[in-house]
Amino acid sequence: MKRWVSTLLVAWFGVLGCVQAEFFTSIGHMTDLIYAEKDLVQSLKGYILVEEAKLSKIKSWANKMEALTSKSAADPEGYLAHPVNAYKLVKRLNTDWPALEDLVLQNSAAGFIANLSVQRQFFPTDEDEMGAAKALMRLQDTYKLDPDTISKGQLPGTKYQAMLSVDDCFGMGRSAYNEGDYYHTVLWMEQVLKQLDAGEEATTSKAQVLDYLSYAVFQLGDLHRALELTRRLLSLDPSHERAGGNLRYFERLLEEEREKMLLNQTEAGLATQESIYERPVDYLPERDVYESLCRGEGVKLTPRRQKRLFCRYHHGNGTPQLLIAPFKEEDEWDSPHIVRYYDVMSDEEIERIKEIAKPKLARATVRDPKTGVLTVASYRVSKSSWLEEDDDPVVARVNLRMQHITGLTVKTAELLQVANYGMGGQYEPHFDFSRRPFDSGLKTEGNRLATFLNYKNEQDAFKRLGTGNRVATFLNYMSDVEAGGATVFPDLGAAIWPKKGTAVFWYNLLRSGEGDYRTRHAACPVLVGCKWVSNKWFHERGQEFLRPCGSTEVD
Image (cartoon, rainbow, N blue to C red; front, side):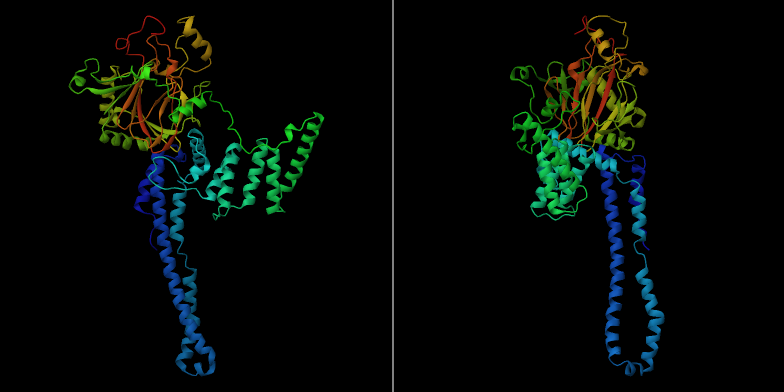
């Protein structure tokens, strides 16, 4: 028996072994699944070849026996009169037919099943499938895509055609339903009905869809439509166990509603509602502004502001290395000042950093403001790793380059963080700096007091580092993104789009050490593409003479 577990399989086990689930949070790690599936296909094809060879032998034997028994059964005594025929009959029944039985019972699937069983422990989990479904819904909401557009795969910048079947759309709707998300349940179940009505074949039945859809619209408060859909469900499946009870319940509620309307001398509430439902309001106050910027809408780059933006060669305040080879610097925003640098990292450096970061990638975390404990969150979907200068010479080289460009020391900066965004990968609006003041007694009035009062229960995220707050952010774009993935500043109305090899830089703190709250920013969901970034967070300590304090709190 051929051994189906390939050398390739063993190679990627080393990568997947340290990953475990949450594949949806990193496209970089999802690429390993492509090779895993390819290996399984080859294993399956090998099994099919063995089965086909076995069936070919069985078919040949059956044809041979059919011709022989047709002849022998026509004249049994005459056939057996020949001693050779009599011998062969005894031999066939004693030896050949048992041999055929062994062939039929031979388990040629054992190799494939063994391979599948070994690989299954590294397969995506239910959590991954739910995460992937939520990612599509996030893209649907952020970029205002209807289910039909997603189902047909009509996304900008796509290289490959991809469509969702009826069963795929049903899976989307069921995932939303299981999360109590009835808004998306309705959208996707309606898409399932649309594709079924168009004649698409599927294992999913209309009765199954109507079961989910009727209850979802009821949860959204549309009693009339819930009643209508339940009646349709019973017409398709009169014995449905829940539909009958639901119908009686809905009818009773509707009758109670009519009685209330009559008491109020109005029938205004009896009108059937339109089957259009609003997206529920969530926890993010600037949701609409944030998502508009992600779509490239609402950018407040007025002609007047644009006149204040310039391009120049940046010499790094006289840094010798940059006097010889200055960087191209472009203003992205005037206040707060956000700049982009070009050709910061070469393609070779980018690939090397991705190579050494990939095995270390782990689900990106956020710090709980109440407990100070690092935890995963739905509003940050990516994987990240931290690289030290000892990991590879390229890390030290890139760190030194960022020091030359910014004029800030990297001695007190955090390690180089490398992040890869997954399906619909994002990081919703956040601050890079800690909002809790380091010394509540430093000042008792003005902004510092307001900061203390507003965030006195928030843990000091960087206290243990002993290097002060995050004074500045240097963000390297290590890939182009076909669609989505912008860095946006909701309070400013600014949107910055990824360009491979470029970097953007801004100060998180004013010269007084107060946080600049205008720098609240977000990484928009990646619609199409694979987004890689790396960033360096510079801290206050060590910058005292490189970026002196201002004379007022707002400097």
